[in-house]
Image 1 (spheres, one colour):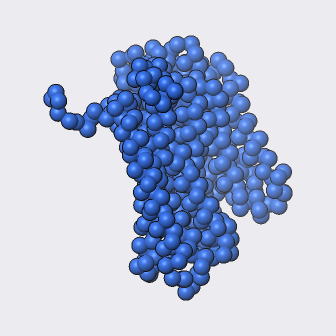
Image 2 (cartoon, rainbow over the protein chains, first blue to last red):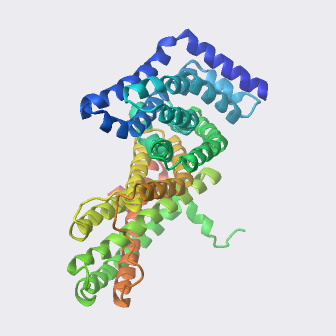
Image 3 (cartoon, chains in turn red, blue):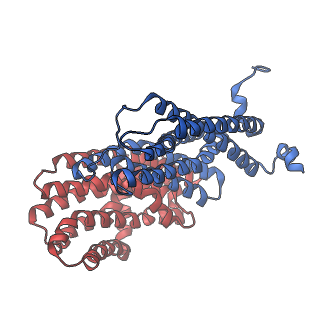
Length: 222
Length: 248
């Protein structure tokens, strides 16, 4: 079982490395959205510092959502998804592997790049560290929850817009606790409570989301 | 088991179709009567509130629709779960038939809430925990309807919708508590929706009657809608072609 998991992760990472532009698209989408806000709101650093956690998190939400389209679609098209459905290993384990690989490719670069963007918003180092940490535990939860939506809309016309409608409401708790932790830490309240909740959401998503995704995949591929 | 009357008989669309018509007609009657009594009570019998004046009367619409909006989602999730487990076609049709009414109830609750908020709080919208979670509930309904609409294969649409509903049900408490916590942390709204139970008995009675009226209305509309869905999906079967209303 663990072998299958590892094989899926390695395979998906290899596939992603062969098509690097997909990875960069998500990353640059995140960068562009974050950079647009100062242009729309104005360059006052006091305001920017105030809105930074929200802007970063909403941008991360959107970037993660946009990347979902590619999660199962290629496998669905070339038929390898059907092989995964037929595999003796539990489908939820394979799904977990795919989601992990997907997050390593689309979520992790975003986390690593966020300090640089944080400097643009004139955030102090401590806040940037908290932000990075919340993104580090928050974005995997986003990928896990989003996988359900991606599986449900597999191969449907207009699936891209539809997935946003399905997934964004479910993202709200992650947004609240992610942005909330940064804000609470910045205002000196201490974000430990928020971080614990974010971790709890991640654990719950890691447990339940692969099962729901597997069920959805079976429905979509039958 | 032969010959014994069984409720399971009605899990067949053909058997349920006439029953749905009867339930729908009876519920319509109940809804009209209760609505007449409820509206009369809420406009003429219930006393004017000493603090809020006449404007408070909007809660006789607002509260029932808010209750129904949450209740319908649970009922939909129940039917969706049944449909997913037992593979009964009718259960999924019920979930689909309830969705538009649920969305409308959510919308009415939000809309009347805004009308109530303007004179009472001086603003159309407050980012209060209840308002925000009701808004998110509205998004969940729209997502379900959109997903069902986008999939042409009915079997897949039913089952995909069911998974979405069940995921939504698991998420609703999480969303509600996160929004609540977010709201208290921001301490934006200085007003609270909670009025306490200082409501007079007559007001409470009027509100309960209105709730039952909304309930009966929901059942009636869902039954008529499920009849249409049955006709649409079973249009190639023999029993549909033999129906008098189809033959005409």
